[in-house]
Image (tube, rainbow, N blue to C red; front, side, top):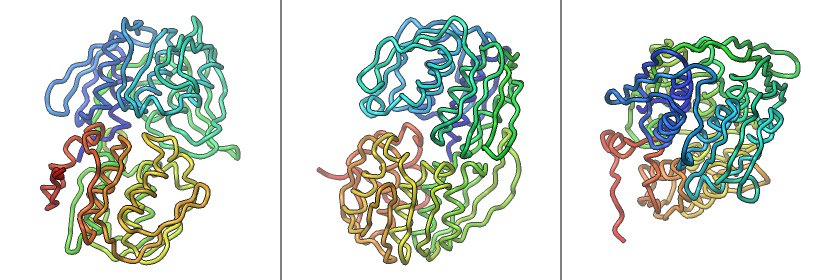
Length: 425
């Protein structure tokens, strides 16, 4: 399985900032992460590939980043560009950011709002605070206490990264818990960060200007990528698949919880810790699934997995109700609309009520449709998984963007017995 994308981004960002050497094993070498590597080099970090998944990073310490000479092009990497905005602005740098057609459509305002409170200024941008965008960091970053208006690990992480080169304490209050990889990794690199819980939610306090030191990082397998062979193993009759060293951090485990509630036969074996994250081997067997209701508070722990959950729900008996999916509308595509269109193209009855998606499962899927991916890698992979178990093959209009997060997807799935081939025009 490929390394986790969230951990891979953060290992390069912090490894390229810390003093001394950071060795990273199992890095996801997808296009999104490679854009982060390029960006850190442009800011003066020494980032080198040593071998397959093995990387070395050397930085100049907090405060040691340099202003880049050219625009930082993040391609399709929404996580990379948003985290970099926080890191660079907090270091007082003026940087122009850009991306591909998909990334240019994605809103940046929720990241820019707290960064402006910390003293950053938007010098130039497209209408709606979209890319291409030039952001100037302040000479002295202002420490803030910021309560997240939406559950977003990207916003939280951008604020914390901006607070690294800031005198005083930067505080983020999180009413609804999101993935906690930034807090874990900052601690791993030596930052003084505390996390407490009270009635108002989680309170994260970072003391500015820490002495970050290079650390070894072993990247666990990405649960968002593991979702595709996992669901395939549940849907294809007679299947049994073992997925090794998959991260099972509770802030990322919403899909596993939902599938188990649907009756999935998933065994968790060899639970251990890897790179500061809980991991285990998942043994998946073909299962008869039933419809369930997925509560809205589970969304932050599985926001990237709803497309493939909708595919699983298509083969379940009964209705699966997925509530509170507003965040899907601002991902690589409007994922809620894209999922609904893909279901319709393959004969799956469904209903959208506000931000809720209801899939009316009948235990089987006709298939035979062509799905518009809208340059979204997770839409492409989810509906290719549907095609493995539907009566007729499923076609996606473009699979090239899969390389952003899971370059080995087609090869791995073929190794498990899938037939994936280029459609004849």
